[in-house]
Amino acid sequence: QVQLVESGGGLVQPGGSLRLSCAASGSIFSIYAMGWHRQAPGKERELVASISSAGRTYFADSARGRFTISRDNGKNTVYLQMNSLKPEDTAVYYCKMSQPPRDYWGQGTQVTVSS
Image (tube, rainbow, N blue to C red; front, top):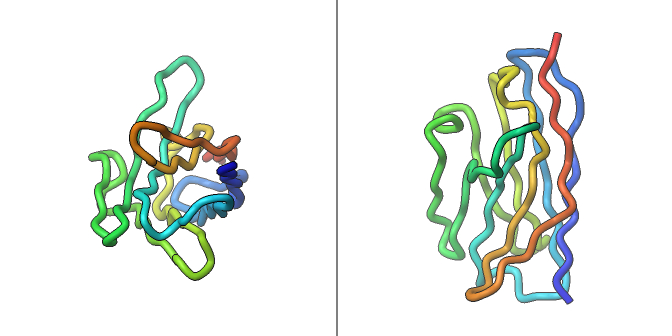
């Protein structure tokens, strides 16, 4: 049974930084792509960043240049470093493991950017 547990969310002022972590268990972490998605109130869930098993990364336009995604296969953990945060980054952030044809999701962690 795959389990994904996110942590690191919280309240931060505009311009601040947060690092989200997602710890995976129940699967061979290193061979699957991982992603971070977010969902703001009243909006659809959207992809923020992803990283393949080979370490190739993708960023949404809203995240490119400010966010970094990385993975530590020894710790079965994927990270999202978020810098220069803006109020519009406020959302619940979800970790996803892609095991085609299935996707597994974490429970989410709230990020609030506000002064």
